[in-house]
Structure formats: structure tokens, C-alpha cells
Length: 162
Image (tube, rainbow, N blue to C red; front, side, top):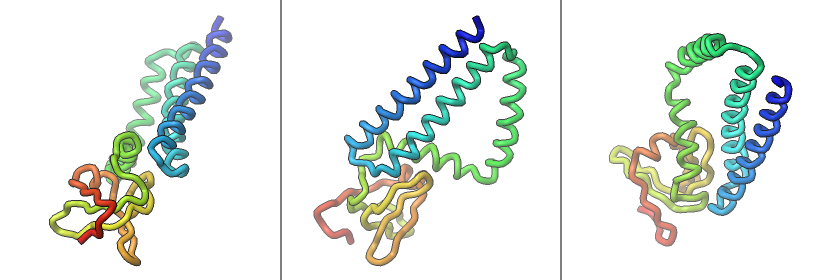
């Protein structure tokens, strides 16, 4: 009985991963997102699905919930300590997912980030897992994903930005 549940879980996991990849590819291509971004967003979502199903299979195979919770709390404690000093890494990855699904600007758009201290304007060259690359003349500005979500952004594809 346990073996059939594990096999059923593996089959469901396979179809969930496959469906999510197809859905992300269609969504990304429909929005004109670069294949590179589609690939790493797909990998991130696939990792989350796999983690969920591995926990589910461990529970099905007889590992008690308390054992799983102790193991996961230990893992998250280590990860938490490791990321405490680098909290911006986690927030930028989360911001990258938000940008993928909800950011109204695409690679090639001329933008200006409303930052009172600096002039951040130019053409979006790439949107990566941690930052947005903005090309202004010969220089490339690396702007963190979390900050581009927190600041106002003006899109102006037809006029030269000041």
C-alpha cells in the first residue's frame, strides 16, 4: 500500500512539475520575457514543488511528522543563520519572482527609477535573479530587484530620458 502511494505521489509530482514548466513558459513567452529568466523562474518553482513532494513522500513512507519537523527546523535554523547577514539575497529572489509575474516593464524598455539621490535611467538590458541591468550610454547600472519594486518607475519608450 505504501509503495503504491509513493508511486502515485511520484506520478503526481511529475505532472505538477511538467504543468508548471509549461505554464511558466507560456506565460513568459506571452509577456515577452527572455528565455534565461523563464528558465531560472521555472527552476525555482520546480525546486519548491520537489521539496513539497519529498516531504509528502517522507510522510507517506512512515517517517513521523515530529521527525520531519525536527529535521526541517534544524535545516531552516542553519539556513536562517547563514542568510541572516545576507537577508537581501532572500528578498531579492522573492522580488525576482514578483517581477517575473507582475512587473510591467520588459527588456528593451526605457525607464527612469525615481530616486532622489541618484539618476537611474536607461534601457533595461536584463532582469536577473538578483538585479536589473540598466544600460545608460556606455555604462551598465546594476539595480537590486527589491529596490526597483520599492521605488517609482517611469516607462518612456518613445522619448529620450533626461
